[in-house]
Amino acid sequence: MEVISLLSLIFVITLGVFTKKNIGIISLAVAIVLGLMSGISSKDVVAGFPTSLFLNLFGMFFFFAIAQKNGSLELLSKKLFAIFGRYAALYPLMVFLVSALITVVDPGGLTGYVVLPAITMGVGYQMGYNPIMIGILTIFGANATLMTQVGVFGNTANLIVADAGHPNYATQILLNGAIMFSIAATLSYIGFRGWKRNQHADETLSLESNAGPIDLPIFNGKQKLTLLMLVLMILAIMFLKTHAGLTALVFSIILLLGKAADEKDAFLGVPWETIFLCIGIGNLLSVIDTLGGLTLLASLLSSISTQWTLAPLLGITSSIMSFFSLAIAGPIPTLIPTVESLNELNGNRFMNIELISTVINGGFTAAISPLSLGGAMVLAAYGTLFKPSAEERTKVFTKLFLVAIVISVIAGILANTGIYKITAGL
Image (cartoon, rainbow, N blue to C red; front, side):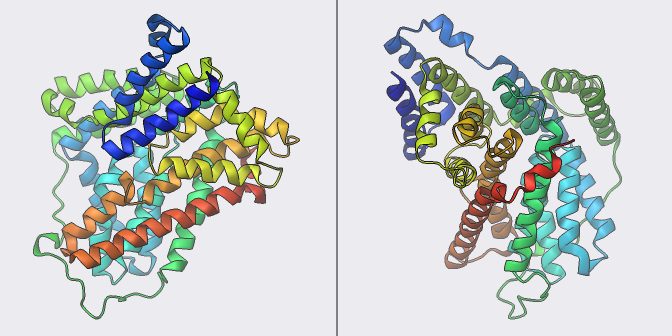
């Protein structure tokens, strides 16, 4: 059953990709069928349902759906760019840093991925920068702090690491992500020759009339309340060590009672597809692990890895899997449990945190692919701002895809340099 259970994961991902159905829903169904085939009762299958993960995802996403609906985070983003926009020569750096800062303030990551690209790319174009480069720097900036332990993805990754028997690596995971995506942003800046402004002097691009100067009203009462609750929520999670999802729900209730947003709109704003993707694959992986599938995966990876290829193999495998599934739902929970045994089988050349960071960072390099949320939003913002032809849109798609591939390979080999050891003593 080890082989069948492992093949079921491949089957689920393949079926989801080709049918364009939610992989998480398919995973829940396959978990039940796999349990029946192997003699695991439905009760035991349900016991493997990741309840804590579900509460984390729903609570955090529900809170940020409220923040998105009343425009508080979007207005905060615009005000920050209005402040820094005067420093045109430093704009690419400012984009990266502000996107990283916003993602710390917005631990759901949605603002950096969904809201910022259109803002940063429009302002960047007006300053003479390549808007695609600016969009890439926006996503990489968000990725640099996405693993904050008070955020949806960082908290979830830390739970997966803890469940695999590792100590608390939250700080190291966050800092290693910042290191990786700072390198990725620097390489992208060099690759796009970011120091050369007015690269579109041939006027092949032009901003649409509705993408002009940004109107910046003052924060209204609902937005002020939302930002206050956001700060208090982050402080509670960080210093009181409260459950992230349940804490977010407490502050969400306060916002709803304060009429900061409509409850129905907040529920509609929750990305249920993403939530079920995560918990569905999580439930299936629990069954696969019970049947020995993850142990078999570790053995297979070990048989083709050496001391020098182990880290690149884990990183690139995580990246490849992320092209077809959410990193936090597919490669991270699948590969993290194999890290310790793989390291031992290869002579413990690495510290476990090095391989853990390789898997996590590799998983999120695919975010700039147009097949993933980050790249898709850059492509969408480009289309909204410039109304490109089908041919130009295809070129942008290709550029984003190539960047994702190149950065994924770099992320895969980075651990061999020992760069992730820098944070080991923290």
